[in-house]
Length: 160
Image (tube, rainbow, N blue to C red; front, side, top):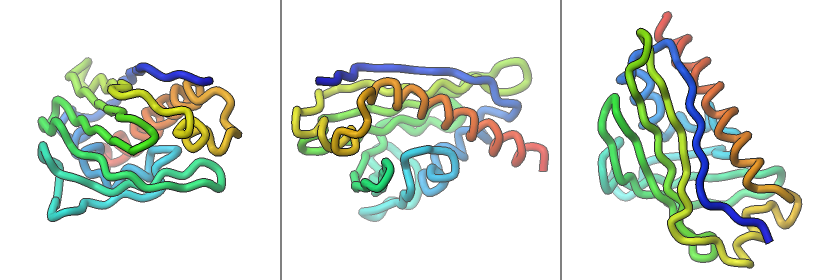
């Protein structure tokens, strides 16, 4: 059976920490840079990033899609945006973005931490019904792709 625990990657973006934070914390824009999140919207009265706010995300892997409703646990403009999603069979995973000023831009670190493990049945679901044989690698590559796409968007918007 596969396992997950944590992972993180960083990238330099030539844009101010506040600008990159604003892009990430607007969860409705997540599909622009995430290889798995195909839709996201604020729910339950939330209208933007704040601790306790909830959003509904749709994840898609190949032909499989599912929904989850993460809760924002930290929303510090220009510094950190963190949320956690809990699914009955798929445990609890905390996603965190840290923004640090660096060389006229921002060092962005994206990470995940498995707070509550995924069940055996959950593994069948998150592995695309068994088609993803190395979910840890897939998630690592997904973080890398997200950060690269985030850099492209943020730098383009900062130069406009």
